[in-house]
Image: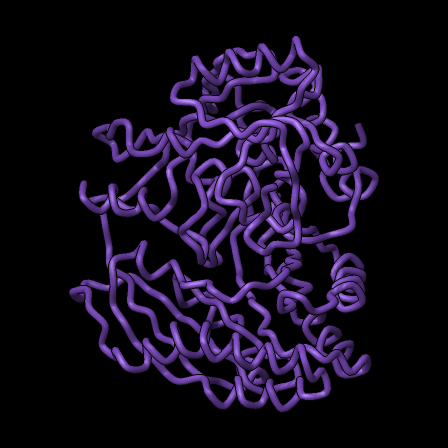
Length: 428
């Protein structure tokens, strides 16, 4: 049996395969066509939805990792199975870095772009916007390389495909010279953050914050490029925030909340009180990533930036009105618009709100009420996070959805890469 990171999705495939070459993958796909089997490609199992589940073949790209070549214009070709941590290290060894990343580094490159993984920064897009060429093996076993010059339409589908067009094997990334980031973590009143939000996100390369349900406090993170040398400037605060507060203490407090639900407001106050200020300067890829040892389930929605303040206002009212006994922090991030067909940020500057529930606690009512609120304000779900939407919904919110479906049908006419979840999502 296999399971995802959060342990909320489990599946038992007939086979778990780790091919060593593109030719081997192509052969496996051709055999699956003949036998009627299906294939789901697995990365690091970090999707909360059943994207990975299959009772047929689970295919891992763990044997296809590392940088393949570096071009003179800072373009880098890498195997799509490369974990982001390894990619960051190999790029740094060559004086390069990615322009932005999400907050975990254990994902594979293919998994990150296929689900719309994003960081934060209102002038920056998701990880997929850094990709300039994709080589994949479609449902017919054909090895194909697509870029904006030879097929822009299909390239926009491949930049976020949920693994439904084929197995992505290598990518070309637009990189830049390696740089250091200065991260400032502060404890601030949520009301103050919201009042100053427009200027904060406009004046800083990266801004995100964690709000704590049933608490007036938030933890803000402002990050900018600096010329300073790497090195923690506040080691004790870093230890308190990264290891104690965000992992050990959070685990302990959430367990109390789980056993004694009525303690949620007290737990929230303790979490808020424990936030400490911190400043550190490090290589960019090290600053982007954070340690995630506490298991939870997550729902994340993309909201049009212009609707964000109203959504937060109504969300706070909703939490108070329903007396949700939740103390796990919510994450708020801000991204630029993009032109990727299935990207939640398609054609709009956006805010992402990620809501979490500690492992083993019931998330049904909390997530459903929040989801209804987000949808009412133009929300689109993150593809790798929990949601209840189907093809009818996605047709309404994505103008290019039918275009994507036609390309999916072209490259996988026999449904080799489909599972039950994707059949619901695509209406197949």
